Image 1 (cartoon, rainbow, N blue to C red):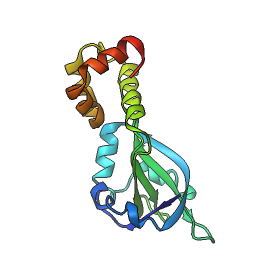
Image 2 (tube, helix red, strand yellow; image 1 turned 60 degrees about the horizontal axis):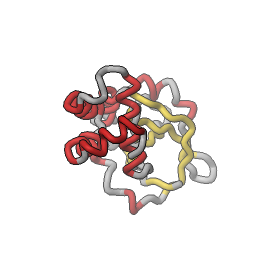
Image 3 (cartoon, one colour; image 1 turned 90 degrees about the vertical axis):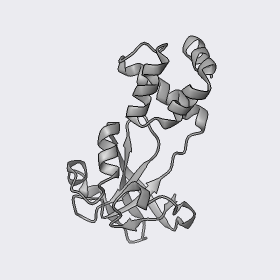
Image 4 (tube, rainbow, N blue to C red; image 1 turned 45 degrees about the vertical axis):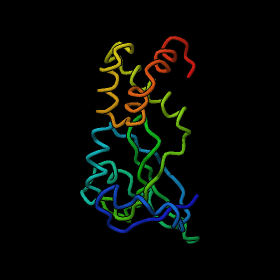
Length: 161
């Protein structure tokens, strides 16, 4: 797989838009799942030191074949994330955007199940499900609930979308 690594990017927005310029091969050594709120803080402060990076500096390097060995940092329940190669530092010295690779239907199902598994609300309380989805960064589900309440209810009842 290939990605475009950016040196000292500050936010996730600084990484987006380079997908077509993906010129560097990489290998994901470990996936790090953060709570959505933690991921938001991380993705808006890539140059800040982060303990989860410090604990994994030995897993990030560039090998003799110029392959970036990195960690994938993402929010729990999402597929989108940030590839990080810290070059021995405790911050994301080199990073690349890792786009969502799921199809939209599977992404919606995964997000519904993630909210269900928290036990925070009755899944038929769609305004509350929508609020939780928004707080967790599940914007695809927020939109889906706004546009397809009937399909959502059908999924909750039957498990089919």
